[in-house]
Structure formats: C-alpha cells, structure tokens
Image 1 (cartoon, helix red, strand yellow):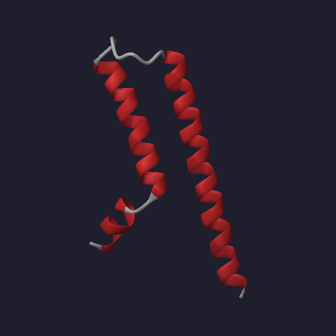
Image 2 (tube, rainbow, N blue to C red):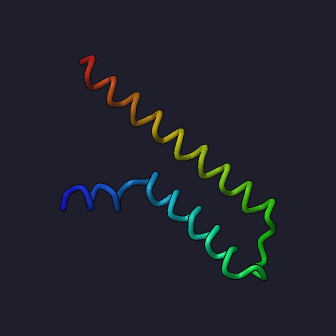
Length: 67
C-alpha cells in the first residue's frame, strides 16, 4: 500500500499522466483545439520536467549516501 501512496504523490507520475491524457484526448477527439505541434511541445516540456526531477532525486540520494 505504501508503494501506491508513493506513486500517487510522485510529481513524475502526475506529469507523465497529464502527458498521456492529452495524447489520448487528441487521439479520440481529433477536433480538440490543440495542434499537433502544441502537443509535441507539451510532451517535450513534460519529459524535460520528469528527467530533471529524476536527476534531482538521484542527486539527493547520492548526498544522503555520502554523509
């Protein structure tokens, strides 16, 4: 149960879920008022955010190990 709570409190999880929701929404509703270019840009920003958060978390983990 703790893993589920950790997952639901993860910023990376929610960022990935938002990106997936936008892609699925556009796939099922082609008339959704967001262009393909805007979706691509959103996914790129979310991927950069997820990567940055992962690097930050890894750095925090390394700091705690070295102490």
